[in-house]
Length: 146
Image 1: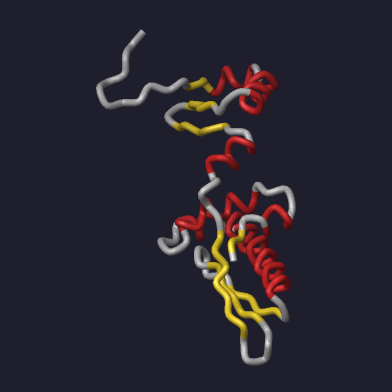
Image 2: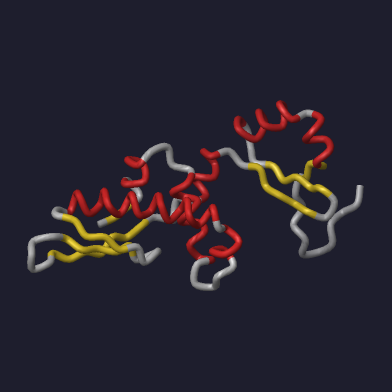
């Protein structure tokens, strides 16, 4: 057994060939027990259940900043992503913002290379993933603090 160099964190790494041979067992282990790291040639990737991933992303919530307009409507934006919306009521504004979040998250993922590599959009990635892994719009809505 070779010990890691000083300063290197030891981690359990599964060879991609071994994971592929036992794919069902590998998935069961990741979902039911713990995340895993897979190595293929010089590339590494993490496999993590959505439950565990959601926990990792817990700090990533949204702050809705809003104001009541002269016409009685509400205008607001998400501090973290600069998404804007306007609606007749605060509840309707939250619904609009959720829709904007869903659309932005899908656009981000569909054009991942462009968005992730843009310096002003790279920090959006964990917020986008937080939206993507939610079960429904109500779960997304619960991530918004107003």
